[in-house]
Length: 138
Image (cartoon, rainbow, N blue to C red; front, side, top):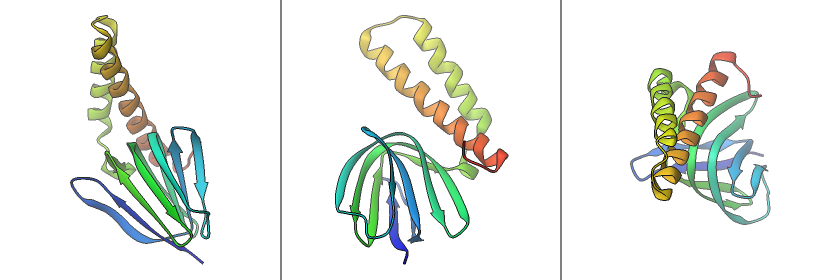
């Protein structure tokens, strides 16, 4: 008995289909959602979002948002989300390097927080791209 999953951003609908499981990074830790899960509303964190449908697992790089879980469906309102095959690894690596350079400049507190957030997003994008190349999730 699958559940319906909708993933949307401000720019587009990323996914709308029946799935068997959703594993998502929340501010309180990673959570796994199966059909008939109890109702839940949670804040999502930067991390790997993976969707399981049958024997297929698809990883996404998620940069935060909200997730509403109902017994028969899950809705994710994401800040940004990218499927592994959408990620340009070279571009993500350049973003990681830029963020590390900003961190070393020791600017103000706000700039440091922004650079740390950029670094986390770049690292997740690289991890998801590498997982796709390896064909598995660590």
